[in-house]
Length: 192
Image (cartoon, rainbow, N blue to C red):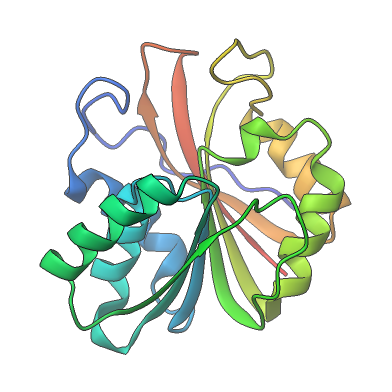
């Protein structure tokens, strides 16, 4: 069963100006209480990896996966500067290929799943990497038609159906932020 959520919480538009505190607020309710072992798939320079590090604190461990080694190097510097006691395992890899990650307490996919046309096999791998009752926190544009930069976004309603078909349950919206591209961005949590 999919549940709506609080909607817009007064964030600054994501693709205009968004600060670290906004990233944290966008995923916090999906992460808190979910356990200390998480992954960020398609992490890029690490805006949401840093948010995870902030939320999890020194007891947390994060696997940060991205295909761009340069982005991971930038991320590593910022993580070391701001959250030196959080354990982060960085991997240069394509999250759409099989990865040995689990069992994890949670996975964040922030603005990464919209690069995948056929989400079925990716979500099967994500689900397999999660422990029972593990969480998937998704951050996505709230649109079903994309563009060159965001080719395959999903509305929250589409995500609900996709998550259920992939074996996830208890999907609920966490927050929404306005976006000058494709209207808005939402975050949601689903449970394995």
